[in-house]
View 1 (tube, rainbow, N blue to C red):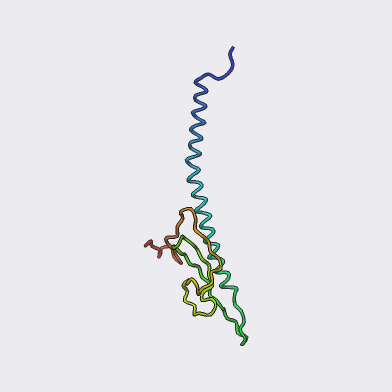
View 2: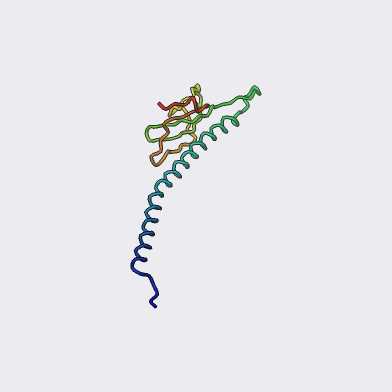
Length: 134
């Protein structure tokens, strides 16, 4: 009695192996993009949380003894040059705060680059129902 694989069994095994390999390769690209998008969202959320933390914990006392906030902090979603998320101290050091990041007069504290084709196109604050794409 001969033991071993027949040619048909070998072809079927190789076909199953090739099919499974192709399936894994096709799904890997989508999985990889999903992970990159999730990481980008976490990076942006981290910058926003840092701005919140700085804004709530940065009060200092002036000479009269009253407590005041010296600098308001903000996050700028810049689309040129390159997509960047910038955490900044507004109107650093002595200008009037305007709530808008201005290079040169506001101090950038942390800059994160949005990578791999991800792009911030819409920012919704508050209710999701009030948010509509432009």
